[in-house]
Length: 269
Image 1: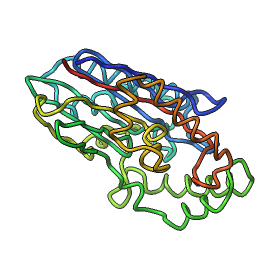
Image 2 (image 1 turned 90 degrees about the horizontal axis):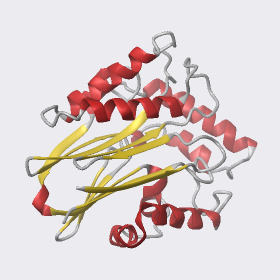
Image 3 (image 1 turned 180 degrees about the vertical axis):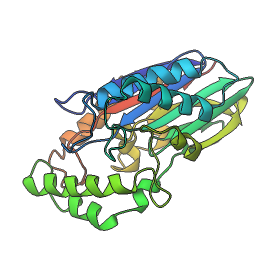
């Protein structure tokens, strides 16, 4: 498995995404925005995704370790690195997770929250994603969408949304992300497909997938063509060019003018 990766911040703030690839493993993490609210942690989201990613790669180096077990181990490992922080804070640093691993002729996947894995089959495409977060708090999301980005109204609406999301995060009635507790791993979407059925695969944070999912400015076949010709950097550059035509979020209401964007592109043969 050949893995090409790139990750780019969406603006001047530090990148809260993380990506890695090995000959058998690809990982993309997307740290959740804090909207300037307290997290109870002195380290921050970039620190969290960096350490969660490295712990994941180490935990899954043994090909016999199930993906859920590896994620649970990584979550426990990161928590142990900052026990002095308030890990019970509902805003404790957290992230979405997308993992693809090749093992004995199979491609095993794990998705926790809305960073998708897209598989290019010999006939068509399949998208593996967890959209439970989209099913909650529709009124607060609509309020964010009413405002142009970078306005005070937008910032206040986003803070209200994130505050409410935190109360439903990692609960039975809400949605699940990687945070401080290992139990989140059991709520991930997992599965396997024969490797011979897949031509290529892409793991994307939503800041890259939005070109298709939110903006509708490309199809998955077009995304894979871009990845083959120009690689992950070209795809992210394409996202930025599209966003530059709508800097205030009027055509495509969104949380940020440009989100952090990450891609891991996997090929065989």
